[in-house]
Amino acid sequence: VQVCKFDAIAPEKKITRLLRNQQPERYNMKTLRILIVRVGGQGVILCSNVLAAAAVKAGADVKKSEVHGMAQRGGSVTTHVVMGDKIASPLVEEGRADMVLALNNDEIERVKHYLAPHGVAISVPDDLPGKLKNPRTINIAMLGLLSGHMDLPEEIWHEAIKERVKEKFIPLNIDAFKIGRGRPAAK
Figure (cartoon, rainbow, N blue to C red):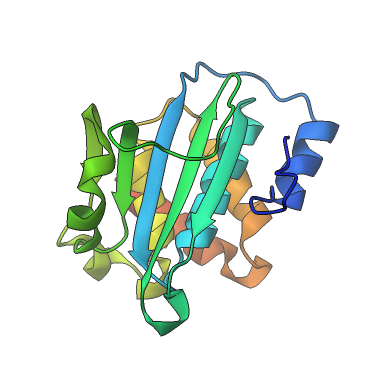
């Protein structure tokens, strides 16, 4: 993991530890550039942390950066997650995003210029919030939706959720992930 010499972009300690201590099975993973956006304080960082952890578990090199803006005052938060065999920069350039995951639909308009011509914009389906046991898990449900566009086994996603979510909230978040992925939640 490369670290910015000015500490402007710092890698997650847990991800760094995973890279040093594990030799994960490698899955077929081309370079993916993903933007995750939402109004601040609504799960963007957790969502990107779970995504990055799943990619590391799959053997990918992962770089991640966050732009907080005025998040504490309800402004937008954008995270850039780039993964693949060898990644140099954590930033997604305009016109190069393979996927934009908008955790609220108003944000798509603000970042659509980041999408590559082949890119996919994923926004919250109208019926998704009503299917969730807790509306605060929309971020993980949307990650379940995004996971359908990636070639990673569901078990890897569950492991990443277990690493990143407080223990008492793991079942709730795994259920939300399954719902987003289009599978029924546990009863």
